[in-house]
Length: 566
Image 1: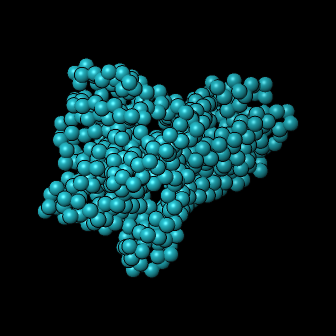
Image 2 (image 1 turned 60 degrees about the vertical axis):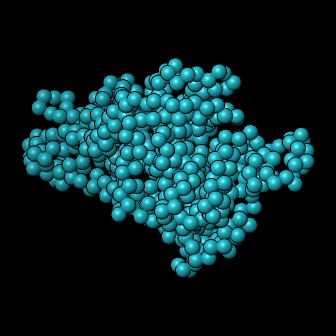
Image 3 (image 1 turned 30 degrees about the vertical axis):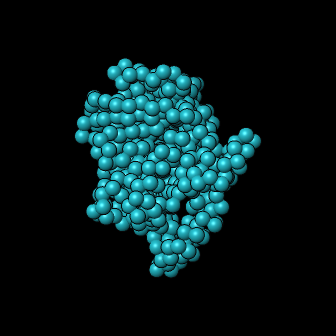
C-alpha cells in the first residue's frame, strides 16, 4: 500500500541521486585530469596526489555554490510553481522541498570545502619540505626554479626558513581562504535547529555572511598559487625526456616555465549571484511600496493580528509574505502566512510573540496588554510577496486533510475563509469537495481567535446545505483541574464549552491510525492531499501514515503528503 508514496519519494531520490551523480562525475573527471595532465606533471612531482584532491574538490565546491542560492530564490520558486504546464503532480511537490535541497547542497559545500582545505594544507607542507636540505633530485631542482632571471617559479615557498603561515596570510589565496572558511563555519554553526529556535535573529544575521563568502570565493583563485607548465614551454621542453635528464637542462631541455591557472569560480557563481541580486532588487522595489495598516487586533496567548492593504496585491490561499519593520530592524525580514482570503479587500497575518523580533513588533503595535494604537500612529511596515507554498495545492485534490499544530493553524485560516466565500457563490465550482480539518493545541485560549471563523463557516455550510463539506476535529492537549471540572459540568450542552461550536473538542492527541482508516474507508479510490503545518516529530508520523494507507494499486486510494515550510 505504498504506490503514491513510492512515486513521490522516487522523484526526490532521482533528484538527489542526480545531484550526487554530477558531484561524483565532476570529482572523478577532474581528479583524473590533474593526475594525468602533462602541464601539471612537475607540480605532481612536488605535491603528489593532493593536487588532484584539492582541484577536484574545488570544482565540486564551485558546482554546489552555483546551486545553493537557487532554492532560496523565492520569486523563482513562485514563478516555477505558477508554471503549471511544467510542474504538475509529483514534480510540483518537489518545489516544496526547496529548503531540504538547500541544506543538502550546503552539506556538499562543507564536505568539499573540508577536502579542499585539508588537501591544500598537505600541499603547503609538501612545498615547504621540497625546500629542505633533505630534498634532492628533480624535487629540489623544481623548487629552486625562479631564483635566477628569466625563470618562473613553481614552488611559492621560496626558502626553507620561510614561515609558511605568514607566507600564506600574505597571499590572495591564503587571506580569502581563511575568510571563506570562517564565514562557512559561522554560517553552518548558526544554522542548527537549536540556534534558529533560541535566536532566529542570530541565524538571520550570520546567514548573510554568505555575501562575504561569495566575494571571497570569486577572487580566491586570483592568487594562482597552484601553477602548471605553460603551453609554450611544453612545446620546447619534452617532459618525457627531460624529467629524467636534469643534467641536460639548459642544453637540450630549456628550463620549464610555469604560470597559474586562470580563476574560473566566477563563471560558476555569476549567474546565481545575478539572479539573487534581482531578487534583492525586487524586494527593494516592494519595500518602497506603501503598506496601509487598516486594523490591529490583540488576541489571547500573545497573538497579534494585522490587517493591511497594498496596491496591486494579489494572493492565493496558503501563500506567505515577508514582513520588515524598519523601526525594529532595517535588515530583518520574517515570513508569515497570510490568514485572509483572496476574496477580501485586505490581507492579514497572525503573529505570535515567540522571539526578540516578534516580541518587539507586538510591543510596537500595542499588544501584550497595552492599549492598542491608532493606525496612523503605528510603525511603518514593508511587505514582500506573496510567495507560493505547499498549501496552495489544496484545491487540486477532491479530498484534503488539513492538519495544524499550535500556531501552525494560521496557513489554514486563509483556506477556510476562501472555502467560506466560495460557499457564498453558488455558481463557483471547484475540484475540492471534502475537507478534513484537524487542530492540535495545548492552550485553550488559543482557540478564541480561530473559533469565530469556524463558527461562521459552520453556520454558512449548514445554510447552503453543505454541512458535509467540512469535518473539523479540534484536540486540546493541555488543561488544569478547574478547566476539567468546567468541561465536565457543561458536557451535555449543545455547544462546546471551549469553542462554542457544535462539534465537541477532543481531549488528548489524535489516534492517527484511526483517522486515516476512517478517511480511507470513506473515500476509496481517491487522491487525498494531506497538508500539515507544525513540528517535525508529528510531520514524520503523518508521512508514515500516508505511506501506510496508500494503495500500491494505481486505481486505489493515495495520500499525498505536503508540509508547509518557509
